[in-house]
Image (cartoon, rainbow, N blue to C red; front, side, top):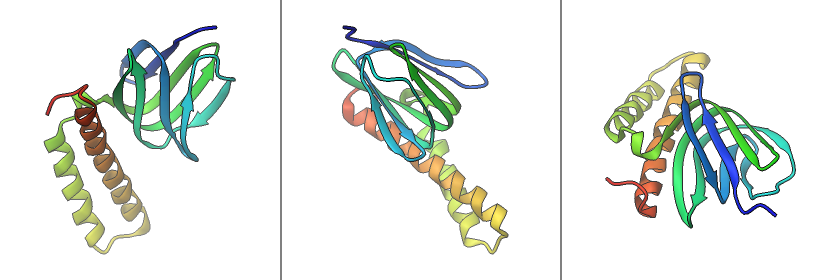
Length: 142
């Protein structure tokens, strides 16, 4: 019985990660799901949030937004619209994006602009939380 599974995270721009890991937890659109070695095959749409994986008993974090996760044959393939390792997240940039999104939400805007502002707000908040979680886990520095 396998003790690890392959985790690959790719975006349209690059391969973000390719590692042998012990566990993967990802934000599905219907809620978070977890995958251990020898998991049954399935496919899920991804939401916005922190994906984390365990390697050598430590938690590592990756921000993901949109896309799909495919599980099968001891492999988790994440095809994400956006993905950043926690250590790649620019907290100041995320904080500025959060402020801009909050400002746009205060303005009287049409439904489409409001929806875009809410999506921007969610991405900024989750980026900051992802980085914070990695710092608390000790796998990323301030």
